[in-house]
Image 1: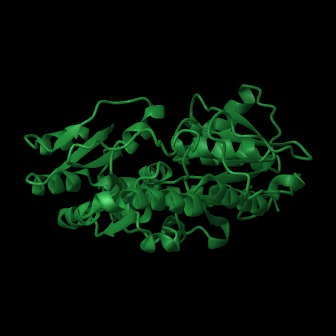
Image 2: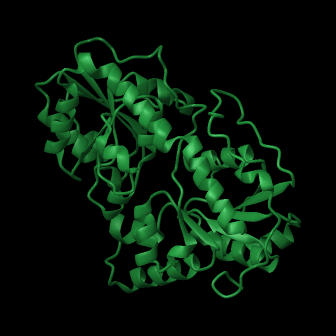
Length: 392
């Protein structure tokens, strides 16, 4: 059975799950503290997922902070028969909830079969749509092609199976309701957040005092990020004291490097360990976000936005209605149209003008906005709401 027909019976729930202390804060290092639940509760993370992916790291830490035991079932053979694999491997877990994480559409059917037979609810946290990625972003097929229609029909079917579906922004909630036909009552917004044990201000690291304005792009080279827009902006500012740095990886890195060939104001930095990324961020004046022209680009708040603002650095992005309402008034965020290198140059210049007199205020504004709107306590409240609703 699935949730659209028969609801599984209620599962036990710890009364202290919602006992959140808004003044508790986030520790600066080590493990997040665990709350002591009156009744032990367990979540089973299901599928072929990477627990070190940023969004997964955040939620695993928050589950533990909320007093949940986190158990993994890593599917090894064929995701669509993961429930059969669970039987053959002798999975005896009795969790209170099954969580299927980022981009694991292929795991959903098996996870729901296994969980719903046992009266256990399922939450799916896709973050991306398979149809959106293949058709609208990568443009592998036109929407009217049979392969694209089959993919959409399949994704609509599997999205109907879990009890709740969580998305990173309200824009993706709208997309899921309008395109994937999931009832809004079964959709929730759950910000991505970032690992604040790693991404935090570094007062000991500041941009070089070399007379240049230092701009950073860090992250994956993907169509939705629009790195070609950044390269073109750099091309238009070769006569200005602006240094454009790239730190990242991905399929489009080589083409980005080729586009930037010959530009002396562009550098491609060497790869650094994950824990050293905040040092690189703090060595720059501002950090760039997403500028692509794909529909998805207008629905996301990029990981790099959470990370740079957690470190106290301002940002430039194309506008997404999923940002918190106060984002437009924040001195540390500038929004520009998608795919517009001229607008990017203008936004960088707006920051650069009088920068020495406003730099510290912009750094503080970035961190304040992050703490108020995007931090772990904010995401934790959202996750508590999801758990309350799915276990009710």
